[in-house]
Amino acid sequence: MEKKKHIAMLIGTLNKGGAERVMVNLADYFVEKGYAVTLVTQYQAETEYPLNPKVKRVFSEITQEEVTGNRIINFKRRFCKLRNIWIKERPDVILSFIGKNNMMAILTSRGLGIPVAVSVRGEPGEEYYNRIMRIGAKKLFALADGVILQTKQCFEFFPVNVQKKAVILRNPVSKSFFRERYEGEREKIIVSVGRVDANKNHEMLIRAFSGIAEQFPDYRVIIYGEGECREKLINLTKKLKLSERILLPGNIEDVAEAIYKTRVFVLTSDTEGSPNTLIEAMIMGLTVIATDCPCGGPADLISDWENGILTPVRDVDGLQENLQKVLSDLQKADELGVAARKTGDIYREERVYREWEEFLCNLIRKSDK
Image (cartoon, rainbow, N blue to C red):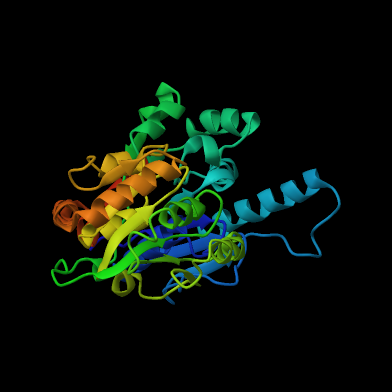
C-alpha cells in the first residue's frame, strides 16, 4: 500500500477570514485521510480557527531577540528560517496562500526539489498592491509548479506562461450548510457575514437599509464578523438612529444556523475572489444580493435576477433599490433562493476536496519522475 504523502501549508495566520478557513478545512481533510500535514504560519493571532490536533503547527517568524533595526538583515533571517523549516520537514509538496507568502514559498524552496503550489485568494491587483510586488509575482509564479486562482478574471493579471499552469479550484463548503432549504416563514432579517473591514464595505449595506427602514419597519440588519471598522459602523448606526435595528454582534460559531431562516443575504465587497459566505448563503437557498466586484467571484456565481442579484460596487442607491424590490416581492425573492440552492452540488465537500487532492498529488507525481 502506497504511503500517504506529507503536505506543508503556508499562510500568515489562522485569523478568522475566508482564506484561513479554507486552509484549516483543507488541513483537516488531508490529515484525516492519513496524510502528514504541517501548517506553517508566521504568527499566532488572538482569535483563530481551531486546528485539528493531528496537524503539526510551525511558526516561521523570527524571535524578538533575532529582530534588528536593519530590514535587510531581518528579511534574510526570515528567509533562512522558512527555508530551514522546509529542509527539516521535507514535505512532498508545499501549498501557499496569499500575497507575500506565495513569493516566499517559491523563493525559499528553490533547489530543494519540493513542488510548490501558490494560491491567490482575491483580486491579484490587491494582493500584489504595488509595482514591485506585481512584477515579482508575475516573474516568480512562472517558477511555481502550480497556480490556483479563484475566478476567470484572475487569469488576465498574469502572463501566458503563468496562465498555462493555473487552475481554478473551488472552496470547500462545510456539511453544515448542506441542508434542506427552509420553506417556513422567514425571519425578517437582512444578513451579512465577513470580516468587518474597509474592503467588505458594510457601510454600503447600512446606508442602503437606512433608506428603506421606514418602508419595512419589521426588518432588521445583522452583520456578523469582527474587524477594524466594527466600532465605526456601530457609531454610524447610532447616528442614523438605527442602532436597535442594525446589529453588529461580532463573530459567531455556527454561521449556518444563524443565517438559515433569514430573508436576504448581502455581500457588499469592493473586491472578492470566490466569496465563501456568498457560496454558503446560496447553498442554503437564501435570496442573495452581491456587488459585481473584481475579480469576478460574485459574477461567476450569480446570473442576475435568476439565482441572485448583482449590484454595482459602492452604489448605495442601487443596493437600496434591489433590497426594496425583493422585500416588496417575496414570491420573487423565494424563486431566487430556490434557484440559488440548485447551484450547491458542485461545492459539496467530497467533490471539492477530491479536486484539491488530485491537483496536489499530480504535482507530487510530476516531481517524483
